[in-house]
Length: 313
Image 1: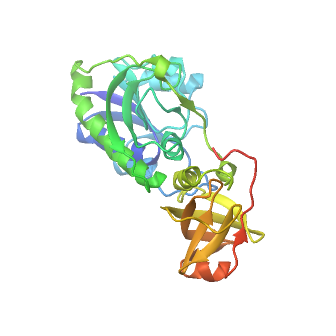
Image 2 (image 1 turned 90 degrees about the horizontal axis):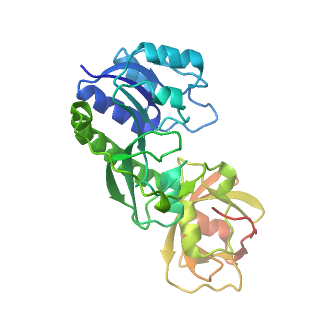
């Protein structure tokens, strides 16, 4: 029997843990995170799944302590897996498993190493991303690749839509890779480090909209941070607002600068490049508005949109 210790969180963590169990892997220990009460918990619970299968579970604040390393070493795992666990694992942990320490990353490595890869791919207007299973080394997301699977990003996909595709891809990659990992025939493909790109984590305040930017850039930001993420925010008529969903529109706008206006009962934002975004969902001062309520809120005269020199991504 193959033994494993699993570090996991979020939907990818739960689905990949399920896959290990379906393949008969003996999961000796699961390490996950305590849910943050300040965070919108919209995803599956790894700890609940582990309890369902009577797997011992720990939620250490810091996994790289000497005590934790000794405990995991005492379990003598064949594999150590990390599935959307939010902390880097140090070399002493990576050296423990007999057959290797592997991570599932939410991009097509070597591109989009680092944090929030799905959100960054949408914000940057990518048309494709995916999931990659790779060996862990001291440098984040830099180890040899075992397998990967791509998924499309369509022009109006929100980050959560893409994340669900990536979750499916991650489960597929692990499902077909596990037999080869266990019998020692899995490929190890070195990454081309010259092609690597790195991105850091995102904070809610990074979602501020700069209406001087192009409609395409703003549309991508809105998609990339749309709920269940914190959302793209701005000010409308002096009131705080979150723009939750937009659509491109080819028509010209009526304003000389960024503005919000109504045409034929629909709400539009004219952006810095004079191109338009149709606003279909918005929250103004805590009130959720859709068409036609948003059109009624705006009224007959265009509303100027506040601008900022702060970067939107």
